[in-house]
Length: 214
Image (cartoon, rainbow, N blue to C red; front, side, top):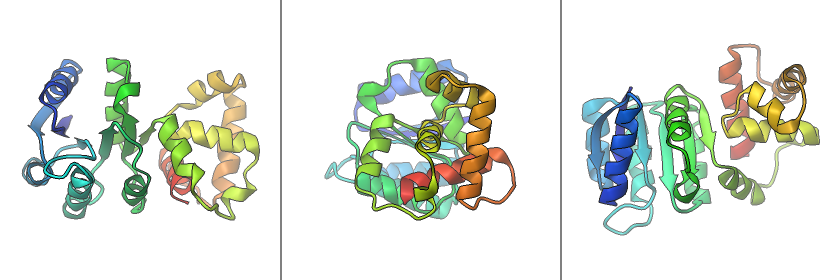
């Protein structure tokens, strides 16, 4: 798996490189600014980009703007945002094209290298990896959606855990229910959101994007 990293702090950038390489990934570029991120994505065609939102020179939204620009040049480019902050507007922009392959993790809440590597692989594969705090902040200021409003409280719980990237088995363990019950809930979620029968992994991503981008 080929990875591009955009992170302005040298120690974190170097640490991410070493961690990912230790988990069998190839870091094709590790840069500290948005312009170099865009150039690296264009040149290397990575499987996933790991991006800090706030990069030089202004430390506002350069990383995200570069990631969005990269996605316009390489449609569907999986992007994992790794930030100290929950940037609601920026996260919503990233979710807007509904292509999947999206993650948003908070730096101070990443506590396990193997789990982080799994999140990178999940995003690269077209899935989602969202920190629960990011999910909560995104939903706090959303106005709602008629289809989402039809979900039961339990279905909303299941969908929230799906957004974190949890499998049916992990959701079942977290909610102390059976995997069969989780499967029934996910099937109901797909129906209520009008997601036509197709690959279930794809429908999971579409359901999560509808949930977070409403």
